[in-house]
Amino acid sequence: MDGIHDLGGVENMGGVQLPERDEPVFHEPWEGRIFAIGALCQTRLTGANLDAFRHAIDRTPPDEYLALPYYNRWLRMAETLLTETGVLAPGAIDARVRARRGEAVEEPPAPEPNRPDYKPAGPGSLRQVDDPPRFAVGQRVRTVDLHTSGHTRLPRYVRRREGTVERVQPAMVLPDTNAHFIAENPQHVYSVRFDSTELWGPEAEPFSTRIDLYESYLEAV
Image 1 (tube, rainbow, N blue to C red):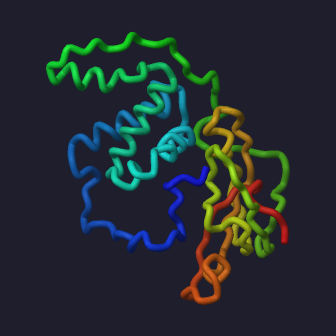
Image 2: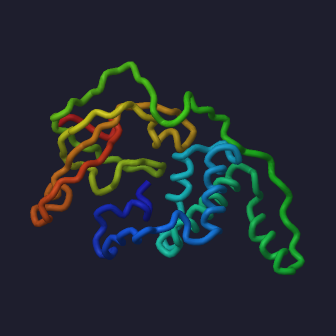
Image 3: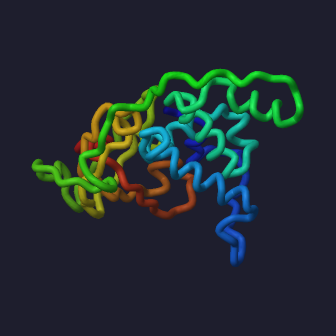
């Protein structure tokens, strides 16, 4: 999904903010609590997974995404997953907040659970696949022109671009299907080197960038 989260290569968005010196893990205590809630939402509370978690963040409306601090996006993701899986009723959070403010608001009844009936084949994302890798180190490849309304980890700015395979990684669960609880569809992953001029044109500052890409994102040149 080409959401506002896919900012790689987008112009006029300002410079990259460098990390703070000796930056703490959390700037405020509430950030740590949201981190814990977010971790639970990926597993026990909702039956979701890491890819569904990322897809929930990706669906944040663009104006909110750009305005919200990092852990506020996590909070919004938690509300999305908790509502979609029937842990919370739509409007339950707003009703609770208003009630705590002293308003006479009745909270909506708890809905029927709607958790995904989907179990991973193993821990983590690494998997074994029987098929050998389609591409080899040193081979030229081109990324596919992928457009989907669902989740993907193929950045928009590398589509239909040519690069060179530098490393064949172990097979991993494909986020595009795992985020939607369709299938794990494990695939080999390749570290592909792209020249800056291939990505951003002949006037780009000369350098190379490397991106890990799933096998279905690539085709032979």
